[in-house]
Image 1 (spheres, rainbow, N blue to C red):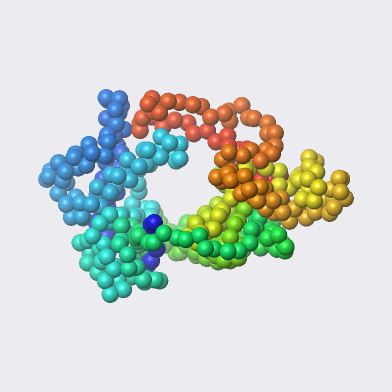
Image 2: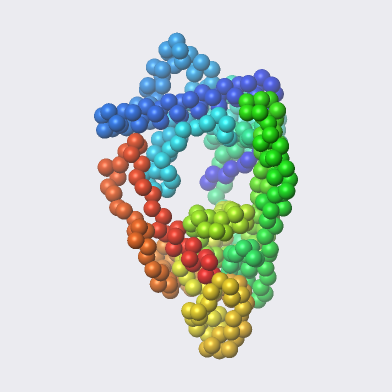
Length: 418
């Protein structure tokens, strides 16, 4: 199987110049053939495949006005074309939006698909030579590719994709259900004990610092050197917020994975939740990032991650007798079951129900939760929520179809009620 290690690299001045040229050439190739594909479709009704773009790129580099495209390694530019083709395929498969033009003012990245190696604890890249790197572990297997990126704060990182041995399912631990929220980030029930973890709210923590930096930026003259410096200062605050959140979620997910063999959680649509008035808190909590971290870390160690359907009424069901409280709303944090008179904490009760539902899914030998509706609640359909089915043969790169998010809108109602 394949594994990824992201490390920070420290190129010298010559290597920084070479990387800047590679970033620019890769960005130009992406934008040039994205525009050419759209234009060709408007004229002929057909787009361009990767083979057609790669063949045209070979002829383009022979022209006098485009000789500078020969400076970076050819594999980097070809990889940019492959990424463009993949972007179109993902768009047609409804996994993402229509490909956009790249800007030099955002994050830059290129991929070296071959001829990369580790030498004396550093990274050796084509046409760059040995680049100083901070490796956190030894890589003794074959390296498949290396993706080099530059952040807005002028830091360089390398994501190393390498082969590793197959994992054996030897992990032992508990089965826990986790309920996600904003008051308590997670509520965990492992069958015996129940505990909560509060969110750290990094955006609100650094809000004052960010406001001061942005005020200073707004006073600078556009196009001046001082403004460019102020932009980097603001970017460093945003980077601090992002790093604080990721560090907390990495540590929390590591603790959950170390303590459990199976983790059960809700399959939330965070994109839909981010359209509500709770958008700032949703983004600040990083719910989707936490589930992603837990999922891949469990997979690496041979555990299982079970996601329960978003319409499962985990908060409304009594974990003792199974009675459903339809009158429960978001403002009620504790309630008494009318069936067995048991007193429930809203989040603890939801985590217990999620754990029980996850055990039921494992006992029925179902993969994930794609085939089970899990007592989904009746939700009123909005008129324009139904997905419009269009044949993929009629779609083209130049005519992006309207992306309807009915499923995301449904999950908003479920999250607010849970």
